[in-house]
Length: 382
Ligand SMILES: *Cc1c(COP(=O)(O)O)cnc(C)c1O
Picture 1 (cartoon, protein in one colour):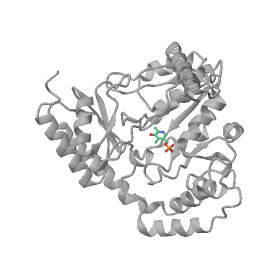
Picture 2 (cartoon, protein in one colour):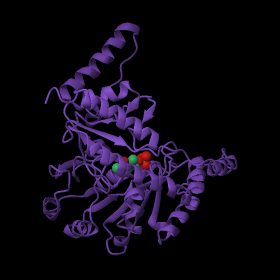
Picture 3 (cartoon, protein in one colour):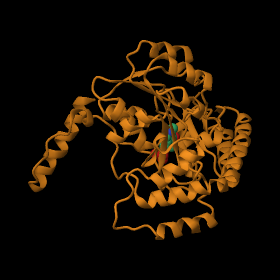
Picture 4 (cartoon, helix red, strand yellow):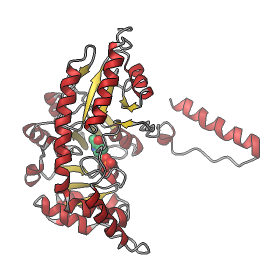
């Protein structure tokens, strides 16, 4: 891996020099050379059900309020570095103080900040694959060692193995995703308690989809300094395009995060939009309930399809497994339905993930998948 990455870099730079005498640049840091850049494989399609977004944009009336708020933002001034207005709204809703909330440029920034503050050379991240790939990417990016406690065959967390691994005491941080992306399952509060008590490692509970599961470990913040909770505006609140996420945590922990974060990462426009949306978040309740109802309907239909294994989900997506999944992925795309292809991902061989869309989008997905399965394309090579 290292060698081939080296060679690719060397040939790219020498061929350039060969054609136009451009001076070549030296190699980047060794741990960056073999990283692979994140590619969500986002291809325009009629039915976009690949990225777990809310299928509906912000409701019209609220959108008008958002636009009014944006119009008042001074563009020449730096934003409030900590987004205190938004912090206060989130703190109040969660029964916390301002300094127990930290806003980030999407949940992704806060995940990177976690690796910057609790990872690094000589430090250890415990991963629970298959899960959100960004976690491992951030560990590699920060030269953090990764140890794994893989999920069981049914994709549930191997609770005893995880607690036993943490009890060794060498892990600096771990991330439990609840509901997990892409498997859709949640962890119980009693298990999170066991994890928090197994060591003094920082435990991030990633609740990016908690609005769909309606489960949170928020009550545990009172008793465990080693707990932080991550949430985002990208999924239930229809703001994937805006980039705002937040952490709930204890003051000493969040003050460490403040040292590593980019001071102005949450721009003034995003702060204004997220504040308007959060103040009016009751407007999203209907859409969330419809997604949950649709998820159950889609799950029941999938269960009836021969050759398709669907995993139960408490989120806004469903993981599927079937023979020849990458051919099925292409078949769906050729009919205008884009789902997420995990068929070549470690632990997720032959898996696809479909996000819950509008009822019409879900019908279209079910119809096309049903046709593909019935035509035997996914059966032939079993
Ligand atoms: C989507 C997602 C996030 C955060 O996404 P942002 O758009 O960066 O806020 C975090 N964790 C998981 C598991 C996700 O699926």
